[in-house]
Length: 101
Image 1 (tube, rainbow, N blue to C red):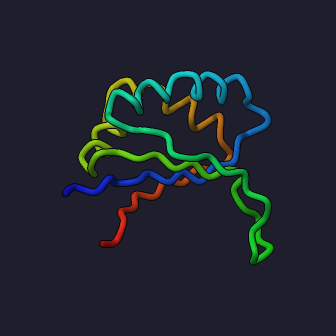
Image 2 (image 1 turned 120 degrees about the vertical axis):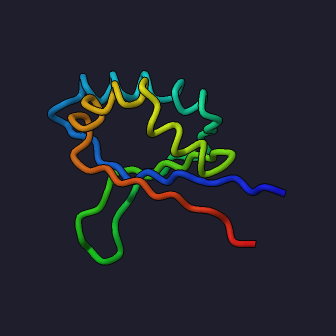
């Protein structure tokens, strides 16, 4: 049995680049879906327990395998929207995780 692999996204939107953020967010779901990604959950961050600045949102997306995530990030259609992503977020970090069996 193959277990899914998860893409966890830690993000803080850039309030000064809302048009770019909205443009990115309108395009990325179709690309994720094309590579087998299924959004699992989106969480608003209330606070970090260490009282350090934290991201504003966490997103979890399930992919069928690691290769699907690699293909998503390498896809020409995703590469084309990276400038929107980079302007639309003041902080963005990706994690690839898998379940322990």
